[in-house]
Image (cartoon, rainbow, N blue to C red; front, side):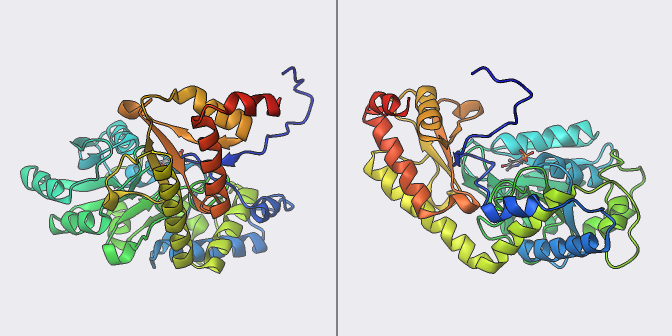
Length: 386
Ligand SMILES: *Cc1c(COP(=O)(O)O)cnc(C)c1O
């Protein structure tokens, strides 16, 4: 394709059924295209307050320090970890996939003493192992874990992990990038101290915002730090003067105004549908997919109780060529799915049914396309498309 950079970019229309971003509703894109206003405009400040309220509802928390970091999920990870840790602090981090591994990297760059706790990829974090590790290592201040491991399709028992951390007097940091609005989250009930998520997974918003929430113990901890937070931009004591209550807003950074219109609309859609209804829709889409996969002779990687409805790790049969199938799916059927990562590269496909993706018509379209490709009829499909 010979394009000039002076031509406007026209993105293809894809059905996004990978690990994120997920499909974005037209209403959200329309909201994003609204006129840009000043970030200190009274009406924009009203919108920020509503975003905060709707995020609190989604996380099931009354945490005052709840807002959207102006960056993707990885920046939310930086925000949670870097606000809490100080050089030399011990943090226990469960690693059962890519994102637990990334959290170790963030904490060690921040100077923490990281104690990684490994679990086989494709299995959940074992709360008992967390308990044993906290007994073995004294003065661990934080426990970090991933609620929904997008690299493997596994969910871990956040309530049990948080209860154990509390028993040992450690604060919990939870990655909820893929779990928010896809499986239940009850921050206050579970006693999670810091959490980060992402706009582009089950919230079905374009990438670039990371909802975060800090509980009272975490805020107290940040206030009593001996050293300053490594990142000026992410320091919650500063950001909250910008996102905080009704007080006059101090300029901190320029909020991504139009991105926040989009997040507002996607949260409004979530709460209009109802959180419970949204969770049930994700579950139903997963069961529909599982049923179709079984008929195609395909199996899931993860044991039934730990499966994420919103991220399905499918074992690739030995007879199938991974990369060519995925590229045919993208190029000829306009459907994106994800590849396996790390030890699971070439072994699994990752099918995300996140937010707007978790709808019966999308699941059916994927299953039909997969069937066509797997039966080797795709040369025909190719010639039809070209
Ligand atoms: C996607 C994801 C992230 C990172 O989010 P980005 O928006 O890609 O930076 C972190 N953790 C989990 C579990 C994820 O799925």
